[in-house]
Length: 248
Ligand code: CTP
Ligand code: MG
Image (cartoon, rainbow, N blue to C red; front, top):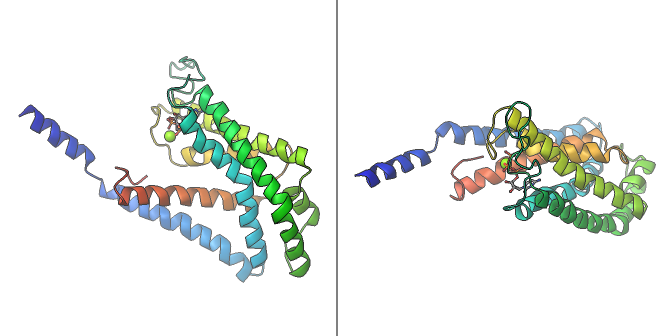
């Protein structure tokens, strides 16, 4: 009898709130629609061209991929790691960051992201930059500030590495700040905090790397929209395929 009760409790817990599914679909439409509008409206209104859009996409990818790599690898390195806050509480009596932020995750993430970033910087200098230079000369483009593009896609290797290091250090710092805010809002480790969870590491990366490179706003908007869309899409898909109990 008790087992049956427990089982029924379990299944009722696993029952999915239909509002959750609707919300997940709505978010896919909002972020996907936003991204599509961001891509098609400027060329239609002649604010910038399709080549500019390709440039924005390529630049955003180059810039944020190391931050993604950092963020993803922290999960692997941080398993059963030592908490950065040493288990200590903040003055409000709640954990400073929580058990989800570990030294192993932090350094493993920075290391992995930096390797990925240096690899991408080399690809950028030797493959993407020659291509960008060619297109900029051939087609009318509004974002074709050659000095900016040179610094973006063809940095001196030392500066390129510094930029990557700042991106990959900024990502976990932004993530830490996100957790700090979540703990202050009384959210347990791992409790979802929409927007904070998805964008903290990205904003941290862009913010810290601003010291050596000021990413233009259209690259930032593109990166944020893609990140939000990828997040809701992958979670909705994982949910549809039965890997996840919640569509987010
Ligand atoms: N992680 C880590 N060290 C970090 C960041 C992340 O060890 N500096 C690992 C932890 O195992 C963490 C996982 O990556 O559980 C997922 O990261 P994240 O979602 O940011 O942490 P949460 O566990 O959700 O904790 P929080 O509520 O503080 O965001
Ligand atoms: Mg989390």
